[in-house]
Amino acid sequence: MKRRAIQALPALAIVVLLASCVYSPKIIEINSLSPASQMAEETPPLDSEGPDALGESPEPPAASGGDTIAQRLLPPTGYVRINAPAESFQSFLRNYALKPSGSPVLAYDGTERANAGAAAVLKVDLGQKNHEGPAGAVLRLAAEYLFEQSRFSRISFTLGTQFDFSFDTWAEGKTLQVDGNSVKWVSGGDSGSGRDNFTRYLQTLFRYVSVDTLKKDMTLIEDAEISPIEAGDIFLGVDANGKPVCAMVADLVSAGAGGGRAMLLLEGGLPAQEAHIVQNPGDSVLSPWYECISEGKIQTPSAELDLSQRYRLKALS
Image (cartoon, rainbow, N blue to C red; front, side, top):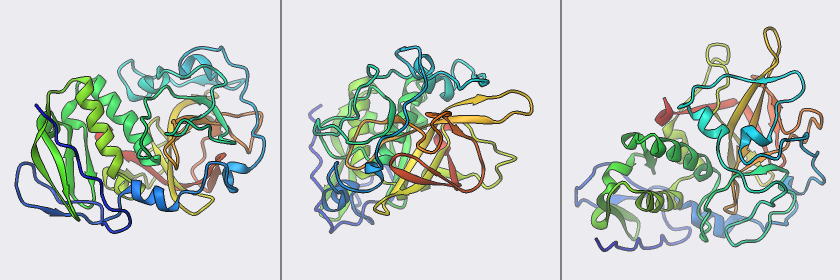
């Protein structure tokens, strides 16, 4: 079916999205700014001063040169990878394809991000729009995992305060139509649950999600002892400009009984850029792994993460 183009949201006027429903012709008020508009107005140049310009980051430890996270980013000395079922999200992340070793982190416009502090860059199709911010980078991975598992009904994320942006509805041939400060489901999209239509769903999702909307699709982990860190957990924090960001736990290793654990962290960024595993600027021996601790803050090459702000995606529960 012929697909209607979604009209671009006006910068700084909009309130992002929405209310619920599926086929109702009722126009639903948008209630926060489009992340794309925020990026256009507030994101500094890639080579600006700030946490991205902290200087040289420590080199990652020797790796196998493989093509996936598990193959290339080896556990630190004395650690082994925690067992993960073959169909788990942790296994999915471990086997995620990486760009060749030494590849720079590229922004949506093809420019290299200076001082990214990347230990490895995920092989993702970023597109040529400044849409896939920090929230989009982590939601992409969750959605791709669920798509690979054919769990289509779980691919649903909140836009605005309560609009359910469901892949099931999208796959029935519906699309979003933005009219000024309002949006609604309309006919005219492409039907089907194939890869191409899924990619179009993601591109639309990236336009409207933000760290604030992401919170509505997550559960705060309040007791670290009852719920230890898992692959897929998301830490919230801020960059040097005070903008909200997030990072996802990509893998976990253990030093054995009585020993500690360590984790890999991945993040996207503003402007839209390739998701990447970050080095650990605070521990050149452990880098790119981070010690799993439950209190305080973690400094990545581009952000400060608050360990008390650890969340788990409801879609992966």
